[in-house]
Image (cartoon, rainbow, N blue to C red):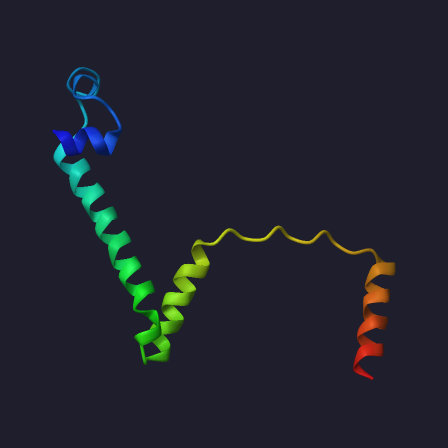
Length: 94
């Protein structure tokens, strides 16, 4: 019962009286799976430098990068701004 209280952030009284229709064993199973998944991810990250296989390293990096917040999209540039950017690239490259 204590694990259910911790998982739901509720008191025992609240669980027994207000949450009678929650499948507590299933809830504990899901919270245990989530915790196990977090632990496995932490193990992968901590052992990342020791992986020799490049594909494994790339998959870990992709998984971590997919969780990061995406940067906001740049507003579309006006024709003048696009032209100035093109000129700057041409001057820098040539």
